[in-house]
Picture 1 (cartoon, rainbow, N blue to C red):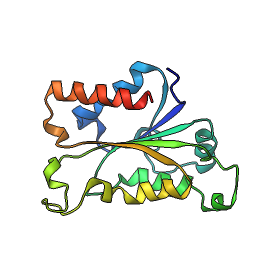
Picture 2: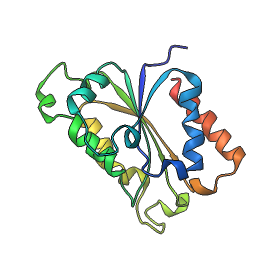
Picture 3: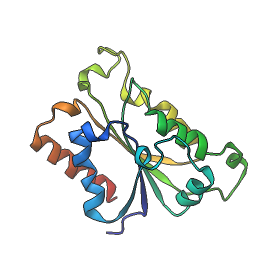
Length: 174
């Protein structure tokens, strides 16, 4: 099976405290098929060299965004990365760095799945909370192939995490 050349854009400000994400990133490390970039490790001062990032993403077919929801939104450094790297002048260019790419979004939440519905505690869905990201991708004709949401991530049993990891591996290999 030919896996798309993929860049994992990982953004977790408290990564060392996230047992689930520590396990999930092994998916990328074990396969050797993905380039993994931890934004909080790479840019702790929040200074993002946009030109270098634009050059980097040009070399990939797929962008994988992996992060936790933080106060119902994107981690601040991921939002800044998008603001700095995605250039609105690209709308009028035919050969910009995001041409012919697709994306997969992997997001973890601390809340239970039933809380993320119109009738639930938060009265909104994860998909609605991700609109700023999915709309940004859509504006550059990047097709979001899948959104994988891991709810209640702090309380997952080991077997649940293994099943989710297998599911993600299959998604990433398509």
